[in-house]
Image (cartoon, rainbow, N blue to C red; front, side):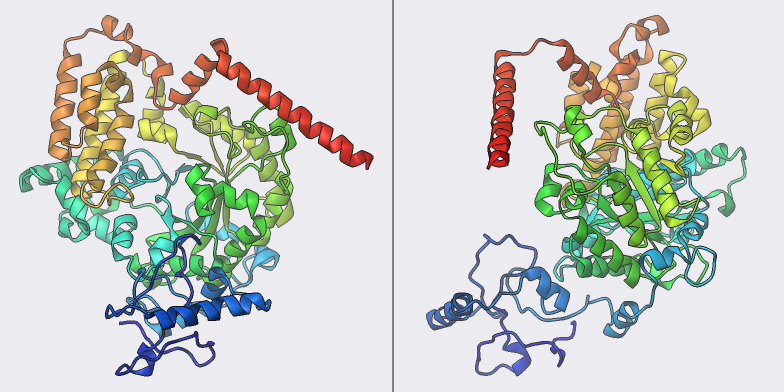
Length: 629
C-alpha cells in the first residue's frame, strides 16, 4: 500500500472524527476528486461504506459557502494537484497524498530533484559541455529520417515492429496516452491497456524463440484474439517473421544481429505540469527505461506532448492543438516542467500544428471563422517551444481546422519557416524539426525534405495503407505497375501484420477490454484492404461484424478475398475501381472534397452561406459603431 501519512509541511484538509479509527484514516477531503467535470456532483462515503450524515452535509455547506461569501478563494483542483494534496483515485475511497504503488517514495524524490538547465540556457549548451543538447539527442537516435506517427489504437506494437524491421521506419511513436487516466491509483487496467513498450532484448528473445511470448499477454482481449490458433500455427507465424526480416536484410542467415528494435517515443496528452511529470515517470519505470545504464538504448527514448490532435474530444479534454492554440502559456509550462524534471538522457518532444492566422481565415481554411485572434505567429510559436528546452519538434503543416473532410494540402512553405525560425533562434543549424503531412508516395518524401529542409518526415495515413512507403524497394511500388502487383502487395501487408499480431497481440487501447485487441487488428485490415473491401460490400460487412473477433477468422476472410480475385486477369483488374488511385485510403476524404466542389450547392447550403454573410456584416457594423464611439 502507498504511504498514508500526510507530510508535515502539507496543510491538512477538513476532516470528520470517526470513533475507532486511527487519525490517518479519519481524513475525508471535502473537494471534488480531480479530473472530473465540475458538474459531476457525488455524495461521498467512507471507504467502509458508512454514509455521511445530514449534520456532516450541513457542516460541508458551511465550510464551502461561508469562505465563498467572505471572499476567501477556493483552490482549484489543478492547484491542489500541483501542491501534492490531491491524488487521482477512484470516485469512492480515501484521498491521500501518495506515490504509485510500484514506485518507492525515495526513488520518486530522487527523480524529482534531478537538476537540469531548461529553456534557452539548455539550448546554449549545444557545444557538448554540460547537459546533452537537442542535437546530441537526435544523434543518439541515429538521426532518423522516416518516422511513424502516433495514432490512436493504430501505433500498436505489432504494427511498429513490422514497419521498423521490414519497411525502413527509423523511429516510432506510440498511440497517445491520457496522462490523467494513466496516473490514477485505480488505473492499472488503463495502464495495461495502453502502454506497450518493452525492452529491446525481450522483443528480440521472443522472436528468436528464447523467451515465452505469453509474458506480453497482459489483457484478456489479447488472449481472446488468439482463440482457435494452435501452438504450431503461432510458431509458424514467428518463423515467417524471421524469414521476412532475413530477406529484407539480403541474407538467409537468421541471427540476433538482424533483429532491430528501433527507438520508441511515448506520446502523452496532459494540461497539468505535475501530472505530466508523474505520468512520464511512471511510463519510464514501467517500461524499464529508468534502469538502463548510461549510453545504453532505453525502451522509451522520449516523451512527446500531444499538441496536434484536431479532434473535438481534444477540446473537451484540453489537449492537442486546442491546448496549444487556446492556452499557450499553460502548454509551455507543461513542456518546461517535463524537461526540467525528467532525466536528460530521455528526450522531451512536441508534435504541433500551424497556428491559425488571418491568412488562413481569408483563404477559407478555418471553417466558418472569418477572423482569428490567434496570439501567436509561427516564429513566436517556435521560439516559445525552444525556450521550453524541447529536444525535437514535429510540425504538421496544417491548422487544427484542416481535418478529415476539410483536409487540404500540407503547407510545406510554413514548415520551412518553422525550420528556419527554430534553427536561427536556437543557434543550432541542425536543430531537429520533423515535417508531417502531405506524404502519399515515396517521391513525396524527398520532395518534402528538399522543400522544408526538415530533418526527417513523419507519416500516418499513408503508412496505414502502405507500410512500405519509406522502403525504397516497396516505395517504388506505391504506384504499382500492374493491378495484380497492387492486389498482392496489399494482401501481403495484411498477411504479415497478422503474423506480427499473432506473436505480439496488440494491447486494446480504448477499443474495449474484451475485444479491443482484435478491434485494433480489424482497423488495420480495413486500411490495408480498403480498395478491395469497397468492391466487396459483403466482405466489408463481414470484417466489421463483431462476431469476427479472432486472428484465425481474419485469415479465413483473406483466403476468401484471394479466391475472388484469383481468376480475374490483368485487363479486368484494371477496369475495377480498386486500380484507381483516387480510391485509396489516403484519398478517401480528398475524393469527397473534390465531389463536393463539383456539385452545385443545395438550397440548405445556400441558406447557410447567406446566414454567414449576414453574421459577418453584423460583426463589421458592430465594429464600426464601437470605433465611432
